[in-house]
Amino acid sequence: MSTEGSRMLVAAFDLRERAERAMSQLLADGHEPEHVQLLAGAELPLECATEWFRAGLTTEEIGYYADELAAGRWLVAVWSHVYDIASVLGVFGRHGGSVRMPPEIREGSP
Image (cartoon, rainbow, N blue to C red; front, side, top):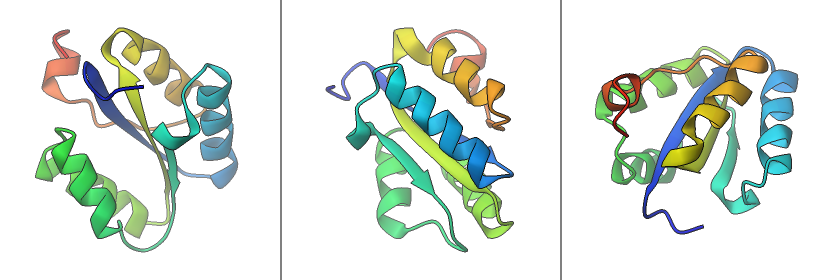
């Protein structure tokens, strides 16, 4: 998938199993493995933060997810076509993911 016409979406999970189930569902739904990330650890890797910034996440959003990692949560990040955002958010929600919703998504204009 080209990242043209797509958006990076990230969710935080309190349990590894929930994050893994969400990731498995995203892959089953057709998302390519190279466009889905599972992250854990005390710090957000610099290359990941840089990629997310280039993908359009704000420094505030990146900081939020870095804080989630530092608090011991798991992150799942996925490149999604804009027409598939609702589906990805549904997967995150069904598996207990917490998403910091960017205003343009909330307002319906990704």
